[in-house]
Length: 399
Image 1 (cartoon, one colour):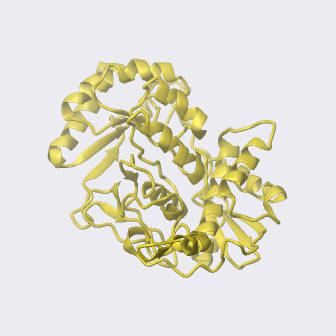
Image 2 (image 1 turned 135 degrees about the vertical axis):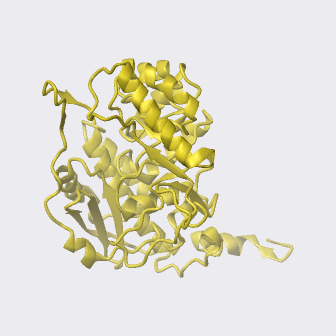
């Protein structure tokens, strides 16, 4: 039936290709190399551990299309080996039913979840979405109904050149690492140093304070009050999210928003945090919490609690690109950690940061191309664990 010259049946018959003209962030979509009806199968899975502990996974197909993803950089060797085991399930299958594959990988094992297994799922998920976007010639955000925005606010290094006006620091004292409990001298010193930083930058710069879970509640409860006069942007990981009730108690003691999530995985991990109002800002890691598939669900859960998403990102180019694709398909995105970072592993650089914002990559899939020669040159033994000890008594402390 035609209405006002529009043939609805002809439009629907084109399937996803009909949406190719709706370009993300104003860029023209590329011609789709694979149509929805074409057969495509996974042929190989490879993993690569770099000397800086970044872990990459590459998935190849019989159509010549490859996808890339990243995994948790702790336990790098275990993650790399685990990704190869997923090949027992994935090789020979169509890569495009990404959510189905996520469910199969997560629920197919008797023992579900955990940091390593979820990190493996995260990297595989990114790579599968990368392939799917490349199949249809569109960025991943468009497959999720985006874009909701064409650029993402970032924090990192404050710079007039990039226009970045947001940063994050940790509590600083003359002696580190911190003890299990600290006294008034420590509290005063941390507050004075943060106050000096606020005086240096003024109120025009947002400054988040990352406790990194390295202080205990007895110390944290004193710090949050001492730091409030200097207007922190947020308190991140004021304590570790292992006991959500303790975090919720601390949230009631300050008007500064609490943020957490970099060590929390899957929707089930974030559910309790939201329900108990333990944090107002969620920081899931796309390389750890379950990939793009799971972060999209977590963002939807958070929206119901008016909680913004500020993705955690200490990793490489796939991590940032995947986080930016997420930012472009959710309404409650807040800011991207290290979104101003540049990477030597890319064949072409990401769109440059301007006025404090990074444009969303508009190429198909993740919107980036890994320079495999450069990546292979960095493959090697990962950095060892960093364990912190109290210099006074030799006991283990958090870092």
